[in-house]
Amino acid sequence: MLSDPIFILSIIGMSFCVIFWIKDTIKKSDEDNFIIRNISTVTTLFGLMMLYSIFINAGDLGIILFIGSIIAFLVLIVGIVIGNPIIIQTSRGYFIPIFLIFVLRTFIYEPYQIPSGSMLPGLQKGDFLVVNKNSYGLKVNRTGVSSIIKNDPEYGDVVVFIPPHNPVPYVKRLIGKPGDSVRIINKQIFINGKAISREFVKTEKITITKRYRDSLGTISTRDMDVVVDLYFEEHGSKKYITRNIRGENIQYPSEWTIPSNHYFVMGDNRDNSNDSTKDVGFVPRDNFFGKADYLFMTWECWTCMPYFSRVGKIN
Image 1 (cartoon, rainbow, N blue to C red):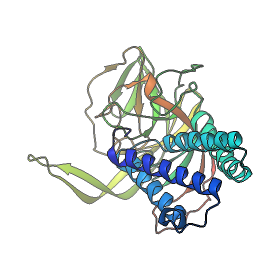
Image 2 (cartoon, rainbow, N blue to C red):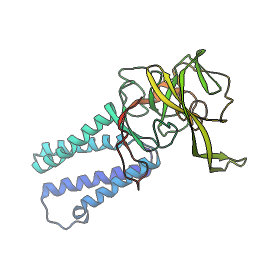
Image 3 (tube, one colour):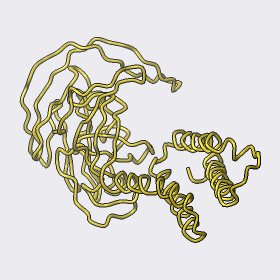
Image 4 (cartoon, rainbow, N blue to C red):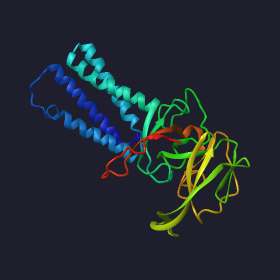
């Protein structure tokens, strides 16, 4: 993303806007200058360009907060050096909240919206989660190289991570740790030969959308009615509900052995989740950037109204 010309242009443009504003404030000029007359509009346009770059490159919004903090701080220093109270007051008003949000989002908590139904029935598409960024150690960003304090993920945690094959964050359930052997027999999970405890809840009939890829690689979708079994599963200290489609994915590879410094994850919607049993594979330790602690809102689509009836701690 940092090499994207749109992102670079937006940074340069916003920097020039700030410079023009500082010069005009110092001069207190009444000169009819297009940029000065439209400084807010021009700056907003460059800001939208930056957001667009982050969106198309699946980047981290924290980069904008970091850059914004630096720009506001530099302007504050300029105001202090030249003794201009207007520049000091304005830049301080931007720097303090932007920097506090940057610290909060980077090192403490970050919101994350579930983009799919892979964690049904407990967590659904559109749920907004509060992700604890220091659960597994402090990192600078989502793919932080190192942690100041390292804490290992625990069985049953709902984890948010960057999969090895895709730069977009995923949310899944942690099933296996480094060195574990994982087997799935008739949809029952075994860790090191011991079955994960589960209890049958009920059977339901639902309609799901399935994706298919033909011999030419074309992907199509189709709605189909299926029968699903719901189970309470207990793994580690967590008890949660899972869903299995009858007749789906009966045959898995006989066993996975998790390599060092990697983890095995699965969606609670076991037969409709891209996880370690499929393309995701084993997840490196450094790719984890937090544990989902709370659900604080559900917003299924932009034309829908958000609701808060499911707010609470995540199991």
